[in-house]
Length: 240
Image (tube, rainbow, N blue to C red):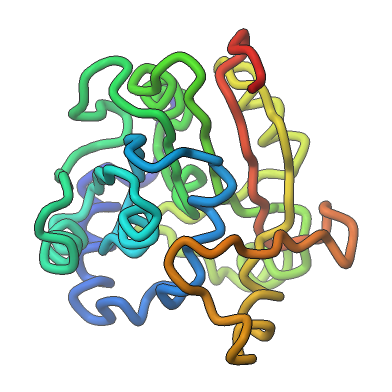
């Protein structure tokens, strides 16, 4: 186990304080989340787990598309917000390294902007594989270390959230990690929100429940994108 200068309790306390102070303002707006559910390609009635679900904005997008949504988060403040937003959803407080769900419970698993914050990423990723059913699909949003924002603003100027264990990896490092743990990478896309946020200012592009959203291609090489979307499947599962 890798030693870290912060503990799970430190990370949980940081997120508790952040959600207590900022609430939903800490995150992207609700309309930013349907694309991640869409990329999973799940049919209505399928079960989706959002790991590090925060206040449940992705869970709302999943429910709007007819999925049975469940979430887990380390922060008790985040879980309380999610339970208020979606009282009927199965939202639990828990550690991604020991997910409180049975083997093979879900058809899809998402984790957005959080894998880089986990203290034991491999353990958390193996847990996501464990709770996925055969043929399950996965969608992860991760931070890219090979960017000006990360190298100069976060690292060079010391703007990293140390207590919140903010971190990043290069595309190659993320891919190697996912493959080593037992995933097969199907697609790597740029973060969809930077372009969607401007497109959605037009009334005819605003997301509506169940509508298919356009998938943005990179305008610059992926290695320069601040955040990356990985769509994956368990290694050995047949493509459908």
